[in-house]
Length: 152
Picture 1 (cartoon, helix red, strand yellow):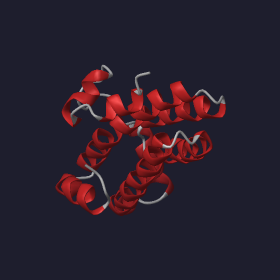
Picture 2 (picture 1 turned 180 degrees about the vertical axis):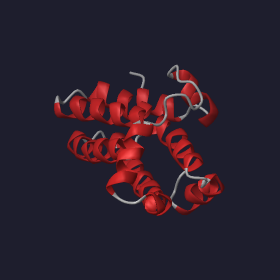
Picture 3 (picture 1 turned 90 degrees about the vertical axis):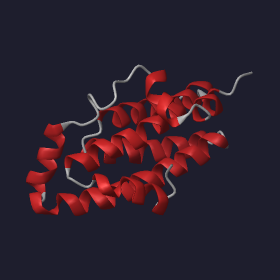
Picture 4 (picture 1 turned 90 degrees about the horizontal axis):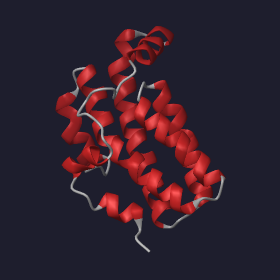
């Protein structure tokens, strides 16, 4: 049996988004969600909030990757639920949708589907972060976040 999770994760980083038919940065951000967050907090706090969120998102992705490698559906359900909420708050529709699908597959005890969706979700994290950081003029921190928080 082919392990779809390992197959996608072994795909070079640049090819992952193409494997799922996604355009480079089109549709990565929900500007309305970001505007709601800025309205609920303060626009001048957004760079700091984004910085904290990116760190947390990388940690969530690492936990999802570990749970997928262990085929731990309970952990996948729990971590994907957290990511679904936080990614939605920060306007990452692709990550939100895939986290929701991962949560559903994990709760349904569908390990094969959960592994495929987990791999797809993990492949969206870096482009989502890149789009978010660019929106707030933090793109110089892309490399720093990857190195400091275990990203690629």
